Image (cartoon, rainbow, N blue to C red; front, top):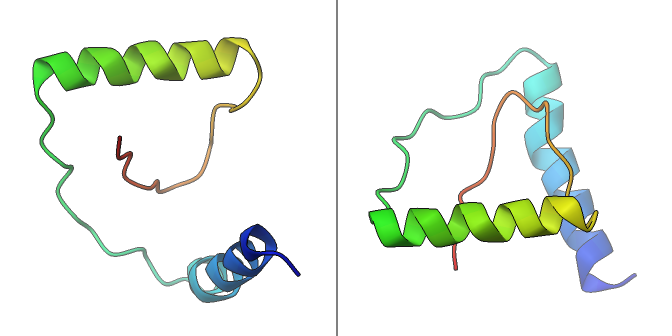
Length: 67
């Protein structure tokens, strides 16, 4: 089993199972991002969406984006 599959398995077993048992994800304030970084992030997200490398999520919570 490669790293990506192990990481997904750990995430799924630890995070999603807690969510489906009715537990809420921990609430945290969003990371502060400078306007120039936010613009670059939006540009990269649009490009990745356009070529199909990522897709919109309907998850009730998300992960931080670091670059």
